[in-house]
Amino acid sequence: MLQLQHDSISLPPARKQQTPNVTPVQHHRPPTSSSSSPCPCSVLPQPSSFLPLLRLHGNGLLRILLTLFIALCILPCQAHAALFRVGVVGPWGCDRLFAKALPNVAAQLAVNRINRDPSLSYAATFGYAVLQEPCETSRALEAFVGFHTKASGYVGPVNPGYCDAASMLSKGWNKAIFPWACVGYELDDVRSHPTFARSMARPTAVLHSVMTYFRWAHIGIISSSDDIWVDTATKVADSLRSHRMNVRFVSFMENTPHGIRRTLAKVRKMKEIRAVILCMHSVLIGGLAQKLLLETAYDMQMIDGSFVFVPYDTLLYSLPYINATYPTVKNNSKLLRAYDAMLTITIDSPQVSFYDAYREAMEREEVARTLKPQQVHQFIPAHHSLL
Image 1 (cartoon, helix red, strand yellow):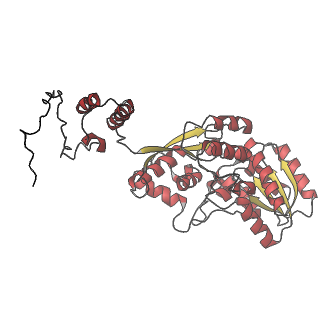
Image 2 (cartoon, helix red, strand yellow; image 1 turned 45 degrees about the vertical axis):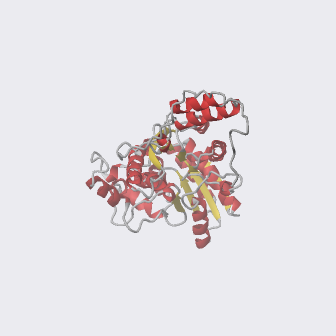
């Protein structure tokens, strides 16, 4: 092995090296306590320990990158799950019967059950907002535009007159919309309406199946004068005609005895019409216009089987029919006989009826006991299921 002899080689005197005043980096251990649940970035060194390293390097780019890294590490981490707020849209303040649907009760019941179920509320905490929809279609659309920042998704709208516009708005907002009253089949086009999601079969598809089964080729539609039902009747007629059904007339009657009689007189003149679809609130839940129409039809001897009246609104919810009594019809002999001319089609609930489910929720103290099940609208389970 060669050994370097110091006496044979003259080396320049070594320059005295100055040791910089550098504080050694302290490696922080994460706290062992599990109660505080710190963010993962809290185990990194504190920013002050990096400052000497920054002084040692003259590279400006490295200095900027390290500064950004430190800033990101000391940002507070999100401690709570995101809030997903569902907007329940409807004419809750301007329609007497829709107000009986108690959307806040249905939404609160559904949200409580979702948040208690870890398989449903894993990624977010659910909340709700009851959003008022005016009864006039134009004003309802104007109000819906203002709902952009009030919810993460929507149940509704109730008025089918602006479903197309609401779907296009939700597409631009990238927020899902779950309607239960929209009619048009065009909304089923996923490419044009990607955020539109049906939660039930189209009512007009059900009507088409029933009319085809009974071979009722000629149909009439009568609507009350309310904007919601006028737009509903128009959309129902367009949808049935798209199925090549012969809709002979669509009449928007005045909600007065004279207006109803005049409308029924037009129906009686059309001998080929067999079925008449009624776009209005059902008499079974307190619809006054339908009550007057049936009583007038009885007086005009139109309930002998020559015409079949089909209520449209019962297609949108589950109307109890087993061991269920309706005082509006039971206590009115004329109305009871006139109701024999009605063909009521509703959503089946074979396991438990709406009244039984609401009564069980009262016993579990999930809803208040201030109202009896018969005093609330059957739209409650529809809202609950949609949420």
